[in-house]
Figure (cartoon, rainbow, N blue to C red):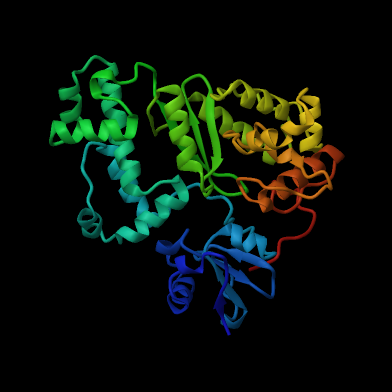
Amino acid sequence: MDYAKGMDTHTLPPVDEMWDAFERRDPEYDGIFFTAVTTTGIFCRPTCTAKKPARTNVEFYPGARDALTAGYRPCKRCRPMEDGAAPEWIAGLLEAVEADPSRRWKDADLRERGLEPERVRRWFQRHHGMTFHAYHRALRLGCAVARIREGASPTGAAYESGYESLSGFHEAFRKEIGTTPGKAPAEEPILLHRLATPLGPMIAGATGGAILLLEFADRRSLETEIDQIRARTGRVAVPGMNPPIRTIMEELEAYFAGRLRDFTVPLETPGSDFQRAVWEGLRAIPYGETRSYGDQTRRLGFPPESVRAVARANGENRIAIVIPCHRVIGADGRLTGYGGGLWRKRRLLDLEREVAQGSALGPLFAAPGRERQPAAKA
């Protein structure tokens, strides 16, 4: 009998609906659920073109993480971990938003396009770390801030950005940016961009000169971290792309392929002196090695009773992988808490250990032609 598994099964559509979508390879369900085949140990997107298994051999999961932690490997045909291009069902909406950021979108507008608002909300929450309406509000405010920095008046910027009333514009400005339009940040905004990795989508945030944020999109504290960065820097955070983000995308691709050990992209790490000292200490841990919290505390020159504070600062790191907090483990050698999930921490450490030892990469990270074993068919 087929069944759905996973910690967040309440987010899944009914099993019969998922099976029907899986049989039809319906692209509207791409990102909504994943299928896992018990006889092959492989999990796929619902649109995978591989031969369909018997229904009794299929399990459904709400996310790739759930399938991975259940012991399944990603399919090498549909590549469910490469979460880059938007599915066709939502691509038109993204194009419309980018073409006219000032347009005001309501749920009724989504329905007119044949889109269910709840499905749109789930997709944006999963892939951008925010709802569609939050994404669009940030985009509109970013356009307004850019116009003000270019010399436009707050009134002109408000109407050019699609706001129908100045009071609504002022309220949104105060809520999202923490100040009034007349005191708009003089600094350039932090641009946020979603990027794909073999361990799932990440959100990168950067000014024109440095990366300030790199987190997995499903991290629960992501929105809080963005708020903290905005508060500490006085900058607005809006969707966009810039040179540091392009650089980190290239360097992450090389890192996961086993070709890069040391990141060169410039970083900006707003925080206390203690936090920055701990984060610099993390960057000093050699690739392929691990240290305990106690080791880190001693190496940083802090007294032993500071170990909890050091551990807390590790967890407050906002630039995953590049500032390698995943290299800190328990004194007994066990993996301890990681904001991206222990399954990701284990795979990052496995990757670095294999590269450091000169071993062939495992199937999750290997580039074409470098697999240790032949691909299994889903």
